[in-house]
Image (tube, rainbow, N blue to C red; front, side):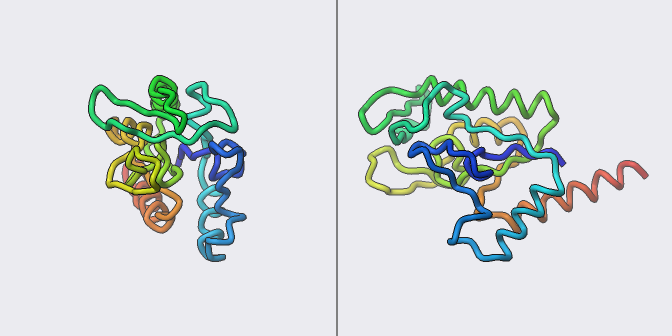
Length: 172
């Protein structure tokens, strides 16, 4: 199965702070979770993206948060620079990759203003989380791509197995 994955989860230093969020090397994850992550990577076709970098933002960059989740959308960084356009361009590029390659599932970085699929920071830079999606995760979901985060590896694995099983049934 083809999976779009946040570059930082793959060990690429694309986070705002110039670091990565590599699951395989993160001491916060149990060995079984790291093993499942590596199995998912090895058993599937992986496409890597950092929507923020694809949208033209540098590494490192200022922290950014969404301050308006409804139109007009607005994302600002901690220095009050409006980076909405960069986030929207990155989201569109991620969607284009999915459309061009028939990708129906993504594994994204939790809590990211681009990639967060369940919650993101509230726009006050106070480390308060709210039940909203990042701009890229939201755009992908609106276009039929199922988005998981690195804390949902078991759910992702189950989704992949069901999809593969369904595909095999279609062949018969």
